[in-house]
Amino acid sequence: MSSRWPERYVQDGPLPDDPFVLLRLWAPEDDEPNGPLATLATVDADGLPDARTVLLTGVGPDAVAFHTDARSRKVRQLRAHPRAALVVRWDEQARQVVLRGTVSATSAEESRTAYARQSRYLQLLAWLNTPELARLARSERERRWAAFDASHPVLDPPPDWAGYAVEPVDVLFWEGSDDGPSRRVRYRRLAHGWTSEALPG
Ligand SMILES: Cc1cc2nc3c(=O)[nH]c(=O)nc-3n(C[C@H](O)[C@H](O)[C@H](O)COP(=O)(O)O)c2cc1C
Image 1: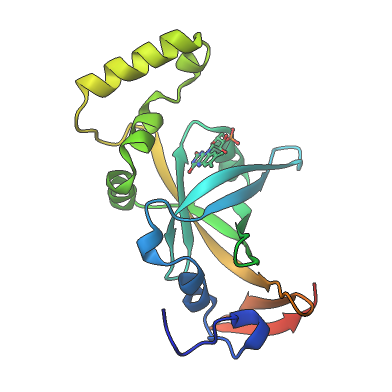
Image 2 (image 1 turned 30 degrees about the vertical axis):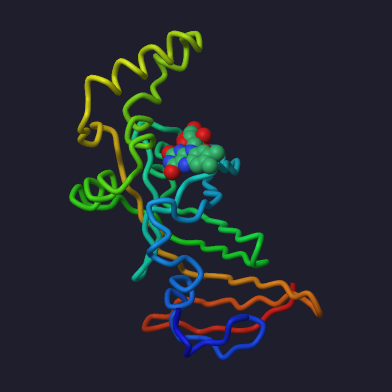
């Protein structure tokens, strides 16, 4: 952990010019592959918001990545409206980050590397979380899982494994306090660099 910034980053300041410096402190690389969980919000074709949990598979240097099934509802929504919000929470530290920005697919190479870093369980899940399997009874799902697991000691990514990067236009860091009000800092992307301001709430 860097000693350049105070421990209660948002409460005490000063803060780094680049929000990703702070985000990396809150979500250190050695947490991967079980990096932080985030709520990913998208909108559907009718403009109705949708949300679900995803695992963040990469943080920085200028975007946050997650991986999913390219046939999923979220991907359909993102193809139509390539914008999203992500909420990441660390309850023990009384911290929250909200990022909003544009979403684009990551490269095939990045997706492959990210798949290799996943736990065996998540690698299997990426292959076996299919509509066909979901319709079967639990005993049959478990039988097929065990058979697939036993016959595939090493796995490549399934064809529909896909990575997406959210490049934020703004990033909100929230930090609570035992002794006073919570405090937020909002970073907004400029043509070059970032601007930031402290906010209540
Ligand atoms: C703790 C947790 C972690 C999850 N991580 C992921 C993930 O990294 N990628 C993913 O596609 N789905 C993940 N899911 C499942 C999603 O929340 C969601 O149910 C699924 O992706 C289908 O979403 P969609 O129909 O909106 O596309 C996770 C669920 C939980 C509860």
